[in-house]
Length: 420
Image (tube, rainbow, N blue to C red; front, side, top):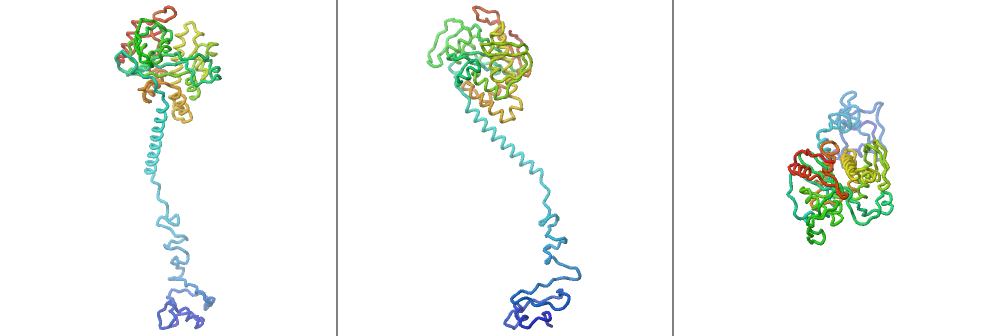
């Protein structure tokens, strides 16, 4: 039987016998099986010289196509190779593993949060000015329950330009004095904030000089409380407060004029309700009654004003308490804490201008501000040191009430003593 289609020349047949394995010198051509579908209409034309003959189409009955001619390797009809699930050349995509995605998203977020928190901690810790050494304070009373902070606002003008001094109405006096002094007690019965009027009459006790190391014997000398700071700085101020109250001071924090104003501006201002309007040419205050937002310049004028009030120092301490509590509340709001564009400028402004004791940690500092927020939220008590009159312009403390107050603080009891 002739294996090749009729009409092919003999020499063409001989050329295409390669690979047949017959006796001829040329290999035999491929056998055409019974499934070969010949082109209708008679013999096929010979391919061009040197060309390859058209490959036959394999079929098994009418309409059969095993896929090789259409590219359907796996036999699926409709064109294109498809996997078991259809829907694409390599099969449908598997359903997403949401549990796995959520797991890795959570891990990524936690990792970013931890890294950011650690970096922020070390950045903030490096900016703290730990300059006050309370180990230099001698003859200290025993520590009680809870924690006591001495918070001081000084009239330091360090780092302020002449333009800043003029804008903030600070003057240009040399040295530092204390405009604000408060004791903040934190414990199990909520925070207690006690203002110490700068004109309080106190006795300067025996103390060791903070720089000279020399011991200066007490002579029973009475001065205004802010004079202790002016005489030998924070260490003598702490020593004087402890001696005249019997309360152990655990930590010290001080901020100057410029730093205070910068914090207020960084946080976007502080909302306050002023009960009665007042003006003071010395501090630059000019306020009307009602709710309003104070910027840094206005806030500094508000807490410094004393000449506009009859009971100058007492009203000023009340204003200071009110504002500082509102400031702490504003700093602790989600709009500040969760907004890095507010949080980091606020932290930077505060830490750059804050001076603390050598044992103060960021945790202690955060606890102090959180306690201030508690006072603002009504979870604590704010008061002035109980007074019993005045002498020579100095305000006298009510010794009996002060003793009861200190006992309650040392035992971390609920404060029942009231102040002016």
